[in-house]
Image (cartoon, rainbow, N blue to C red; front, top):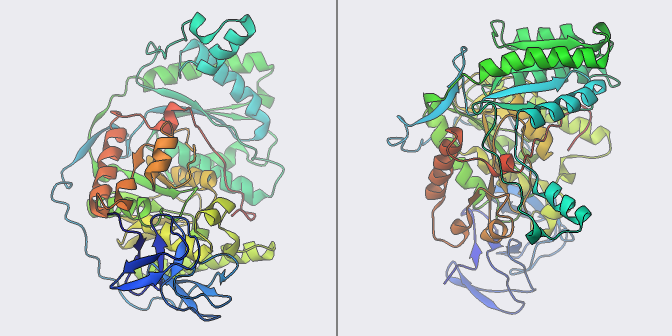
Length: 538
């Protein structure tokens, strides 16, 4: 019989309901009987002891809240009787000794990737079009329309065929849907397009940050070359972008074609020039072929969104184990979403390999939270309505589970948004908790694959890096099979261990990195790109 409750760590004083519980039923747990005091849906938490008013609540071995009224043993925790609370960070208090996983079967593993001259290896081969300013979005869209139609890039749209049927008064069975075409002019390169709302009109710091982010996209191992459009008069000047490229890699030798509309005459003249030049670059990129590379060349972004009460006990720790394996073989996992590390700062500070990084982590956290509070918000307001509905009722509770994605390995570097990953091992990157802003930032910092855990479901993708969705529960995987790549529901049912599931995740990542499996987000054409403005974004 499936367990009905689970306690994550021995010191916890709450447990998670694995199934729906009924008021008045008795559950045998840890050698004692617990009477359930109210109907409790799966994923929510019940008290294992009487929690007095102001009593501290521990989960995942850390402080995640305090009771605002008496919660009797067997009672459910809700937003009405629990308030956010987390530990005060005291700086590094101890050196953490890491028990690395056994990597015997992983240390010589390889994937088939695209080798770049700087030593990086891509999981995809992309020619990227993007603007320096939103004024050029229309021209980017025109170029996208031309390249997608004339080069047969991408897949046919069954919804477009359905609309044509409706207009013509035919039924679905009256016509054959257009099949996905495998007859692309170029089979070994993808052409992708980014638009955004930045580059001008905001504070100069936002343009500087955007320049660094876009330079990171050019530097990313998944990009073979880029076509860049500038208007000419915007804050994000061409020289600012070129300097960002030079800062990120003084020896960058990828083709980067830059065009300034105010110096080029008519739109048609400019677009004709861009198409001719870019076609030459795309043709050259198409000649690059996959070759074997060590999995240590993987930079794996770790993301979560639409989290539920199971995320922290199935999908996130399983991804954390995959992260530990990758770190142990010399790869670079990237943990981000700083608002969702609130409450576990002490553990992360202790895992930093040096005092300078520990101090930088705390300074970035404090500055970010201060900016949120100055705007009348705060990290304690991070859980979304969907999170709360599924049992994540305080930010510390959400954070304690979210941080499990980063495993247990030492933290080798602390990076601010737009800074590029250069060190093997776990990197912490300052981003918002916002799914797309965070994913956008990790790819700009070098992630060549992103693994994204979810309990509620989300279609988020990225223009240049595959984003794999990992469900915390099987119900979600069965309800949204077009979005979910990997299901960790077997952990909840007790059929697989965290370690087994973590190894399955890494095996899947290797297959995607090799081009053997296409990420569901890529199949859906989910190319999300939202830069973080350094104003408040939670």
